[in-house]
Length: 447
Image (cartoon, rainbow, N blue to C red; front, side):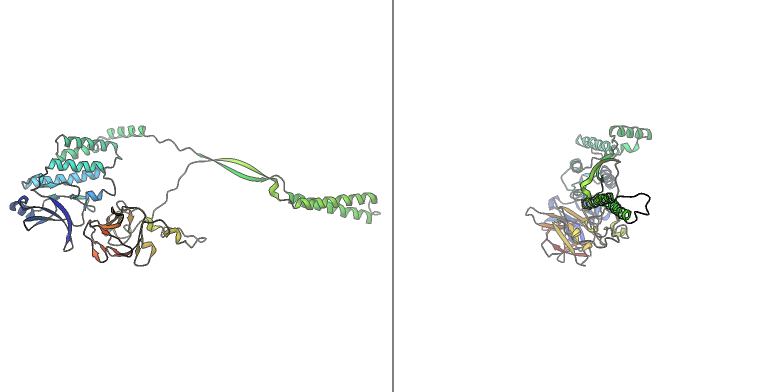
């Protein structure tokens, strides 16, 4: 029994193929086709050359195997999937259908990221028992699980051990995983105190910053000017004492006046010499230590287009800003009104999807692989701020031959390469100059 994804008449299908002798009995096929069972994908049957094909309409849902390639699955998400599975089992029991027909292969368990619901494929003729499939699915969850909550992680491992022992009741597993949600307030408070005492973050110590400053111990320029002024005044006084000797109350001999003039001339020349000496020769370096408390600043990210009117396309809250926002986030000021283009574009990127509209900030720069393109910052590696792009729209990676390829991730409006729409999960190798269209946004591949 094999499954492949195909696209026919603008609809995405999961095609399950099996030999005709293993096909579904007619009454079961009619029961599934005529009744809407909670959590099961709608399907129709085809028989070609004694080969039976079941086509399940997967719409724009995504396999959980692909969904959790980009981020870890949380315990709450596991509970949500199991709750959907439990509702499907209840409906199957009302129609007297066995739960063994549910396929729990992560490749074929589809998830609606908008409604947060899981949908399943039902094939009564399959040979694997429900207990085995449930164990394999939990093992997949365990491999991709987020371990942020210690108590919930322990409860998950306990539930998995119960499944290994033969307890495959989905309701019991859900109750075990959500047991701590029903604790009393005092129990929660006590557990919180234990956690707080176990993980104490010490206060961040202040930082001592040592600074060096230059202090002038002697200003030669100022000293030279003072000496020149004093000497000039002395010469002037000596000359006046000889010219107006009779009017002065004290008689200054000529010899004293000459000596004063000579000494003043020497001082004046010395002042001129000192004035030419650089002040840095007399600078003294003083070290000071300042205690600076630890602090940090939190930058505010601009919201993306999902918050600016595209909720009907994206269905999520604001996503994290990405590389394409560097130009729009640049803070312009009166002193710096020009931003160098090289500061934004000249980065090492593996692949560039150049926007057809010519706007640099609409181009996509891929710096690491694998890379998921979409409008959801929580699930996409690069946020594409364009209308009609799905949360997880397309994925770019390298194959074993080191060629870059793109594949559509069950997007609503499709991924096109050179005017051909890709079948979901089909790997299309990219070449320099190829035209890639994500929904309605056109790009040229630059390698």
